Image (cartoon, rainbow, N blue to C red; front, side):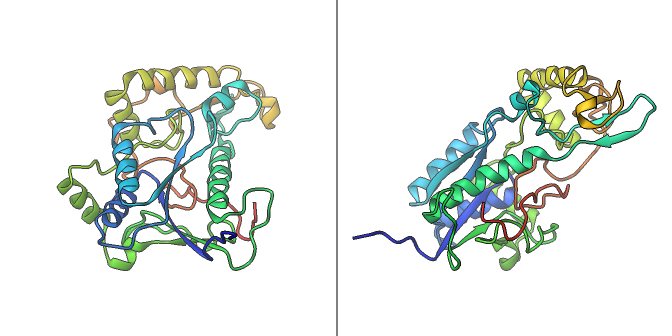
Length: 285
């Protein structure tokens, strides 16, 4: 008998927020309906294989929810190779003009994520996803947080915010996870992500000094010769930085408050910096 996938598949996107982890725990304990599958991004050079994420994977599988990694390849190495420049680096021209490079890594992540979603729907690339086949993708956006616009994602994805529907705030989620002895946040950002907040950079420096040292090395390499300013339509001598202060990463004052929200660029979410959405509506990619 030919297997036909359901018309509507319920997915949970693990974006590192306390809300996403809360939804997984609630589903695992039967407090809300279980998801058909859980999807997390693996961008190649991050802390995605950390112990908390392993625990979430085990929890999902024990509750009968499939666990899937959307792999983008090594985003940092792609930037260092100079073939593509996925990182949204901060720029500074010799005459002091500040700028920003395009947000290429979010597009890479969205492409990887939609590839996994297509597989779960039963329509891998290049097969088009027929009308009526929908992935209902839950994110960890909580009550009181900015929401990604309804047009987020390709046309066969419907983004949902279950925590808003049940009236839970980010603080509610953090308290719930503390009760279950789970971390409120998971660091899923690339170690050289320019969207990291000062708090996230500081945590990386304190909790993973080797990873922070690698980020400092990446920052130095990208600033001096990668990419070529001319290739980006910028004047000679333009410098590139991982931090918005546009100074070397190891010289930044990370004691400044910076953003209160977690950093990162997971597609189809809005996590305080407005960089989560990268897929045009109507796409069937």
